[in-house]
Image (cartoon, rainbow, N blue to C red; front, side):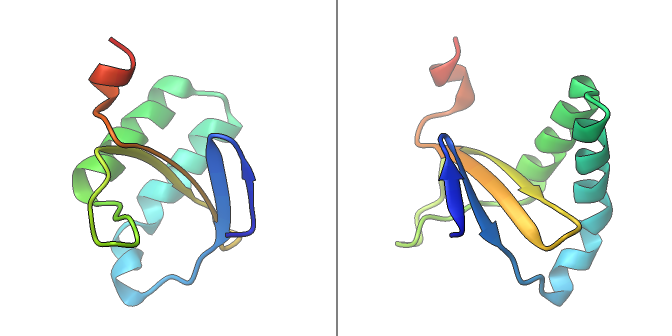
Length: 89
């Protein structure tokens, strides 16, 4: 972890070969955020959450998360231990 801006935490990332299939999706998400196209950014988040699992250090998956992996090798993430529907009814 390189820092936090609660509820976001930030880190440098090392991408592995399996990441390449997701690189275009994360790049699209970054462009959407830069352009303040929140509908497109949300659609990217939904695709990311449906394809990936964010795990706690003990190996337990989190209920919900948002993950941004930037082209510069940094990432931001936030997670919740309850489904988003329970957090924001």
